Amino acid sequence: MTLCFTVDGNDFLRAGEASAVVKRTLKQLGLESSLVRKIAIAMYEAEMNMVLHANGGNIKVTLSDTYLTIQMMDTGPGIKDIDLAMQEGYSTANQKIRELGFGAGMGLPNMKRYSDELKIKTVVGVGTEVLLGFKL
Amino acid sequence: MQLCKVQEILEAKVWTGTEKLEKEVYSACGCDLMSDVLAFAKEKIVLLTGLINLQVIRTAEMLDIKAIVFVRGKEPTSDMIDLAKERGIVLLSTGVPLYPACGLLYEAGLRG
Picture 1 (cartoon, rainbow over the protein chains, first blue to last red):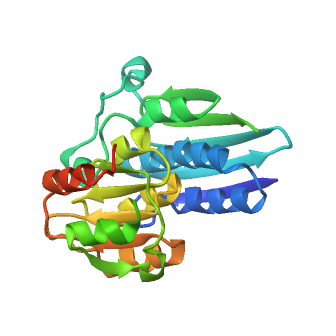
Picture 2 (cartoon, helix red, strand yellow; picture 1 turned 180 degrees about the vertical axis):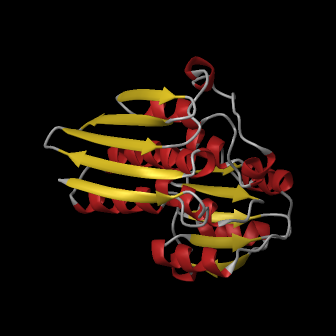
C-alpha cells in the first residue's frame, strides 16, 4: 500500500494532517498501538520540520507486510551540519517557531529515537530527503 | 486518577468530553514545548500547558494523550475545540498557573 501527501509550507494550522491520516489508517489496519504511536510521533516531527523549516514538501508512505517506509522530500534550505542537528537541544528555529511550541532541538533526535531507520540526504540550498523506516 | 478528580482539584472548566470524565490517567506532563512533550510523554497522561494553538491538539493526538488542561486562565480556540471533539480528546481549563497546577495534582497522588 502506498499513500502520498503534499504538505503546504505556509499553513501551520494544517500541519500534521498527513501524520494524523497515516496514524488513523495504521490503526484501522490493526497495527499494535505502541507501534502506531512511534510511527506517528516520528512522522509528525518530520512533517512539522517540513512546514517550519522547508516551506512544505512531499511525503510517500509505503507499507509492506514487514516494513513501513516514510519518504519525505522538500526543496528547503537543507541542513548545514547534520551531526549538530542530531544533537538534542540544537535548533536553528527562530522566535516565531519557538512561540508555537516547537524548536526545542528535539525533532531529529525524536525521529531517530522512535524509528528503526533514519536516513537523511541533504544539500544546502537544494533540499532535504528524509527516510524513516519501521519494522512491523 | 479519574479526570473528574483532576477537574475538581483544579476547579477546571470542561470544554469537550464531559462524557469521558470517568476515564483514568496514570501520569501528567506539564510543558509548553510540544517538542519536549513528543520526546518524553508517556501514554494515558493528562497534558498541562499554557500553549494555545492547534498543534497542541495534534501533539496529543499523536501521543494518544486523552486530556489536556490549559493553565493560567488560557482558553482553547474554536478550531482547537472542534478538532479535540473529532479526536475524542477531553479539554479542560483552569485559572491556576502551570507550576501550582502540577503541584496540586502531584500532591493528590498523580505522579510524573
